[in-house]
Length: 519
Image (cartoon, rainbow, N blue to C red; front, side, top):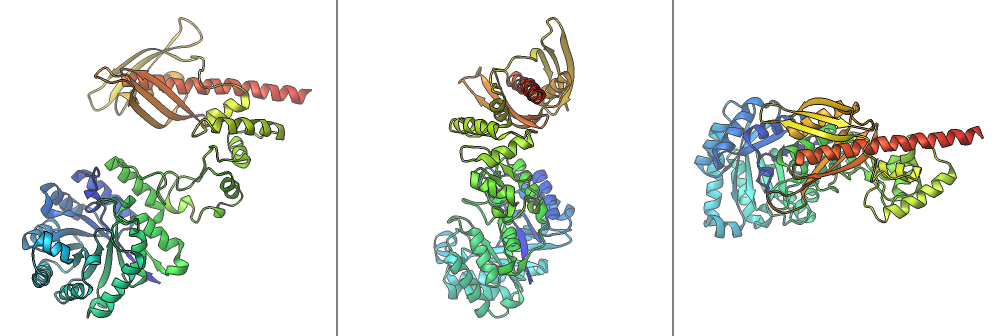
């Protein structure tokens, strides 16, 4: 069984994705997480592109332990020297030089001929070797390069001492059979290449980046270049988590392995999303929100019987939350019954018949069914327009320092009696929620908060929707105001009031059940 090296370029190629830029401090934080994940090579940036990138490389090179740290450079002495300077002091530095090799790039971007391309590639690798022992050479747009010429350029880089040869599918043009054949051709025709590490760097313009990477390693490549969440230029890069889990799940066919700690994949994905503000699509393999979620009734029945019926890996393998049964119009009786048991109810056959019929009618009108909806169906009650058991009398928020503070006054069923409490938090909304929790005497655990403008203009009304858990059950709350902090507080209390109404309905249900047993 052969080891595949994982070259992570999240901080270089991935960061080039629109909207995914990071500060030097953010890149350093992500670099530490990638080191904990177990990547073999960490490409920290393109030193010559900006002072910020050079500084990020410099900090990562000195502070992050474990992976080889690479810096990208064009095939020029200025770029190569900038990369070497940024890597100075690194325990395991790598200079990564590249030049385009396709006729299209040579003619229209570089405006040079093939001979000059070979000369520049050879000179760049030779110069880089004077500054460090670990040099990677990339033939940009390799998959659209003429194979004989590509072999010449790669051969020149090998002769000058490149330790890794990377074959990029820069524009995501290849299909798996092409990529496998190209790697095999290079290994067969370039003297000395089999003694180097052959790498592959695939983009996802045709949705084939991971498939092309797997075809390459099957043909003899031993390094894959990829990014967390598949972020990168245009349609992105090959997704690290998909390659790694494909090699792990299908080890029976691929007979290859990586040193990635797969149980940290979900954590790395979430951190990157937090730093960039860009979330992976819900159906993203391995780390998407729906990767371990099931709505269809047939699937839910199978998963309840044995998760292996519809899951080829467990959530624990990638550090993801446990599998979830999402209730919607495709769900069946088994999934509904399982959710009620999770809520503490074992329903009779007659109750299940009634609730299932009501559930199907509701699911045709609502995209997702929450715990509050199930409690409402079971108890013949409603949790939408609930009594204001807890009502906000006053809210005073102070912010601008290291921590924000809030003071709230709540009134309830007893007129003239107010509950006053204070709280602190990271921002005015968090402070308001802390004060409300103190006044209520129970926790409302926030799962999500969405703010949208309901009206135009500077005095727009902000509508806040929150999803939260109270006593282990999920509720939604809504609030509106021109002050989004006040709107958030109202949404929070809406959840609290729903939770209180649910408890009242439950008490009535258990009282009816006890009376039935008494008879």
